Amino acid sequence: MKKYDVTGIGNALVDIEFKVKDQFFADNDVEKGLMTLVDEDRQNALMAVINTEEAKKQCGGSAGNTVIAISQFGGKSYYSCKVANDELGHFYMNDMKDAGVSHNLNESILAEGITGKCLVMVTEDAERTMNTFLGITETYSTADVDEAAIKDSQYLYIEGYLITSENGKQAMKHAKKVAEENGVKVAMTFSDPAMVKYFGEPMTEVIGASVDLLFANEEEAMIFTGKDNLLDAREELKKVAKHFVITQGKNGAMIFDGDTFIDIEPYATTAIDSNGAGDMFAGAFMYGVTNGHSYASSGKLASMASSKIVSQFGPRLQWHEAKDILAKLNP
Ligand SMILES: OC[C@H]1O[C@H](O)[C@H](O)[C@@H]1O
Image (cartoon, rainbow, N blue to C red; front, top):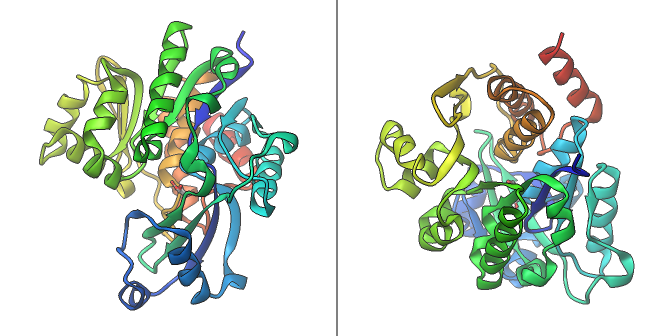
């Protein structure tokens, strides 16, 4: 019996999420729809032109959102990450604890520096655009990987955003090696189209021979495989992942269970904010597969949960919402 269902590794970022009009991007020279890395001055300049009082502040990061989702459904998750000894670092640590996620953060060992922050800009079409200053999480390295937690988990979950630095890439490879040497399954997410567009080669290097479970959206699947249609892309993905999930937005998702493809129906909703929809899908799905559900049932749970997430502002469910969704899955 493992202590954790899933141990995640990824960037620890405090999200400052707010609504903008499309004009905001033109006025402030921001590229819509992507995650763009920025320096602290640039982020502060953007902060100066938004109404921060209307913004929502929560601990985030792609894998962070996923391990929180696992916890909210009743799973046991652990997050191996890095924040600084500053106000946002303490906020992050406490928010993770309140979300029921075990972690490697400890007040007495937080390093000096600046905690990473992500400005999440949400437009009326529910699209999310992110400008991220990584701060101290940019130094996340092999030394920060919690090997004991990985060994005591059913799955290691690797966030694709770590690929932007050499030390992040080494941490991904090291964590994967520790997992594989100890019979722990390896799951990975591409995180964002920009990660496979600009870091396709290092991403392939991290994947190595294969991963057990891969999460991608349609755009990421096609960019990574170099195919211009999903049918070809999904055939190519079989070469690098034993099982995989391709999320398809309002069209649901498809799962490859190692043998056949399973179509997952979407749940109709009015989309408000797509931030964290993929993270929620992965979290609900991994809760399912580590807690005795079939791939089809886990996919259904994930589809219900991610449709709920896009219907509201922010990447996290309320605890009672997670409970309600589970109750609908197992009436
Ligand atoms: O996937 C969404 C997450 O990615 C970014 O890292 C933000 O923190 C946001 O919460």
